[in-house]
Image (cartoon, rainbow, N blue to C red; front, side, top):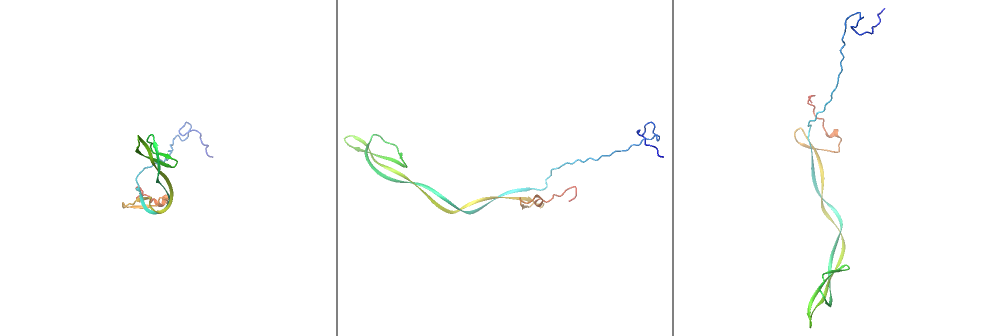
Length: 165
């Protein structure tokens, strides 16, 4: 019949073998580190394209049409140009010899503003910018890539120095 297992530690008094045994314990740990290293280069160029584009616009303009109105009334003093509604009035004076010298308002030049809108169409040059993204190739040349493509399709896997790729 086998002997019941002893609950006392190895080498403790009452151990029939009297010998102690050491069992080594091992544990593995994993440390992950990242290393930043250049794997290639990208550049972005802006290209400007010029083309003609049809444009329609309403062009507004104003002009003044002068009319001269004779007045012929005595004036006590000179008056600066003034507005009369939509018109600009420029007084013109002269001196007349009477028994005494008097200032007469000879005439007025009235400038009436005339507004007009004219619809025109024509071709005008326009410029558009377009970004070109390029990747540097191993031979040093540059090739355009599609920035809208998934990253895996536009980025080749860089060689890993430890694996001998």
